[in-house]
Image 1 (cartoon, rainbow, N blue to C red):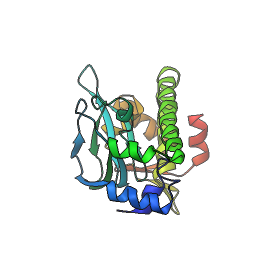
Image 2 (image 1 turned 60 degrees about the vertical axis):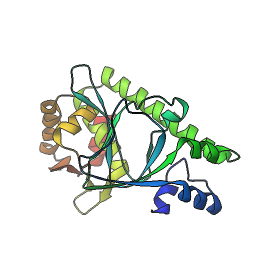
Image 3 (image 1 turned 90 degrees about the horizontal axis):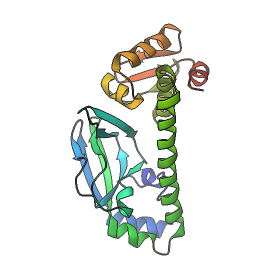
Length: 226
């Protein structure tokens, strides 16, 4: 298990070496293949997970039977923390979107023990929860006030911040999503999202590729997202 990746997670970033060693001894490991589900919405919740490698998607089933994509998470990001305070049922379905995914997990009992006497971990957990709430508020605001191209641009910037790699052509963002999944993430019809991406490409702002994009004019994308 990659200790350096776990140290990037806000929840564990301030642990000293002794505490990190104890944490690793408590953690379980899970490996998934693309499309494999870790747990379903409504399943019993008793563990927190951290992504060590690969990417997972968090989704919920809408009333009309279609999925709503809540988030894409990659190395160093944590999920399942809400059930620590509300140990009921999972609020989303989590599945792998890359060929291989490695996850580290921690039971709620072990996490509560880790919190005792470690205010840095408690602060990290509060920061994680605050970030989730802020993101949820932003998503609601965008769905109400932002047009689809703006939401596409904002999604690209979010993905670029976490998964982008600089190349000679521009910032290569390998998001590993299908067109339908990207549309679910944006909260718009696939045709609408494809049209916005095609428009960005025609203007020279991006280059499109399968399960990824190269941002060639970051300034324009930032301006369109504003």
